[in-house]
Image 1 (cartoon, rainbow, N blue to C red):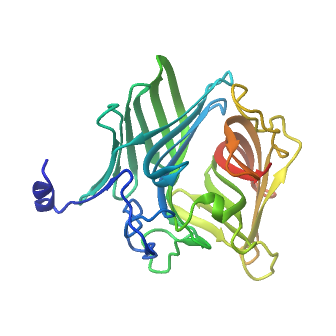
Image 2: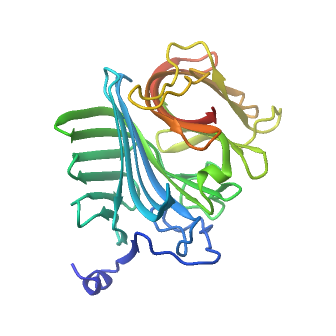
Length: 370
């Protein structure tokens, strides 16, 4: 379909070419009402970037994956149009791949948004299509090494980093200095059917996806973080604690949803008798430490083995507590000369303190000091 035909249908298309950038300052979007899958920059210089990130964990917690579509300079590739995927099978075997497209396009129409990353030389074609209410996302991968589909059916509404449901004029997409974030699909049921270099990879479980857009690269902006999404019984939840390299401050957010309703949200860590607060602390007594792939340069195992997540609403007299244990490493590799970044899947248990306790599954990522 031509650009003219798409325009007649009320569609807009944003196209970016690998290696094409501008000099000078680029404005980052802070408009809370702009659809989350929209391009979030007014162009690209050599430091700006944006990502569409996805995760999944199997129902038994024994396998998981992370994958990402991005625009921005990385690893010496000027304004790269990059695809990334990392996978772990139940037996612990891993696969990780970065590939580079020539062109990426984001096509926004009345009812859906389609993103495509493709390389005419290699034949690589990654495509996601999402309904504009974010209820369903379908990813299709076609390359020399990977073929198949991934689906996400949302269990929770799209939320801002301050826990408000999209769309809301009070929503805030700036999480920390130069770090913008929107949780497009906090938690979803997911089904993965891929063939990777001839080997099948399948998941039925939970997953989710999010958007990040940054004025500078992650290594320049970030010291440490821990981020997770999970489901247990009637609850879906997400949390992120992040320490900035820019100002040395720690930023936090956590949200609990029950069905399509946010029942708890906070960005405060300090205990209070009048307002919500929470914490996401490392745990050290679980069975699994995150480890680097044995086929690459070894890194020390992670010090922690999971988390304890607590959320308190003193006005409602409610206190939730969840304990998360890693069950598999999805990836772990250096992200700078002093930090490493990892992906995990895990098991959790918890609920309201003094109330019913539930078992569930989690996925997420972490950056810590080497």
